[in-house]
Image 1 (cartoon, rainbow, N blue to C red):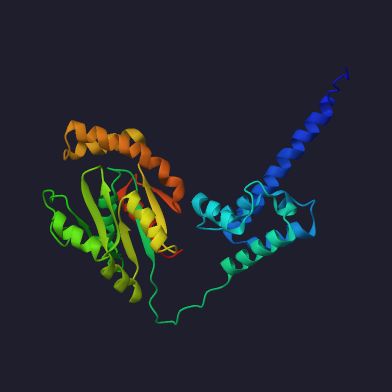
Image 2 (image 1 turned 45 degrees about the vertical axis):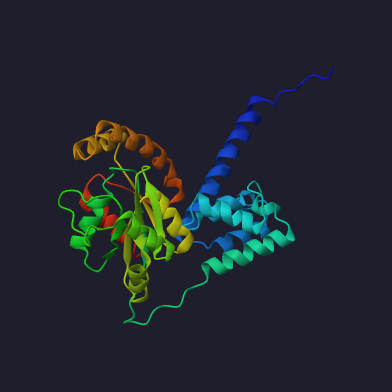
Length: 302
């Protein structure tokens, strides 16, 4: 039986230091791509030139995920489209894999034509998050203090709450009216929430505002945000987070608009909804409404 020879302690320490240094080097490359200091295609070229460089040891998925506004969900989809294994490293790409990845990265970083000086710019931002996180409050603050941003008015089959005005806070529809709009394809997205009422975003006002160069904010639920991502891949999805779970519970209980059974159901749903934040392009913590609103609006100009 052959004896197992353990490496000397000094070798283990050296190997550990080298591994840490390599991880730090790859982290710095990802930071450079994320900040715009280096292009992703430049990193790919560096990996091809020298297999000993940290770029060569990066996984392809790490590089793609470093590109601004590409979250884990988009990265996984892109890897499938490029037919590249999630474990594949830049230095180990085959000729055809390299070519497909290079073409994708070049297309991704291709400069867009700048608008004319007086031409309006439009941006679609979707604000979603768990129940009682304060989406409506943040959206209302944006409506009042940022008049250049169009806040989309959703339709719903639930009855109005005290103080809500039809056409201002929601379009309150009957089930029959909602059904007709669904059949006519008049919603950008719609979903049934909490196994009760349906919510939807009328398509025509959104498309008209974007065509006119105006930025639009959609304040909708997570199911709706996923549908908008498919309909408008260029939309930016922003996930609104509570400061803590305890604060979310306090806000829900403080609303006083649901009975105990409904609150329990909504909190169960909120736990599931919080796990969806990885699908979004950015996250904003709603500690103070003013700060959260300002951060959401700032994402329209990035």
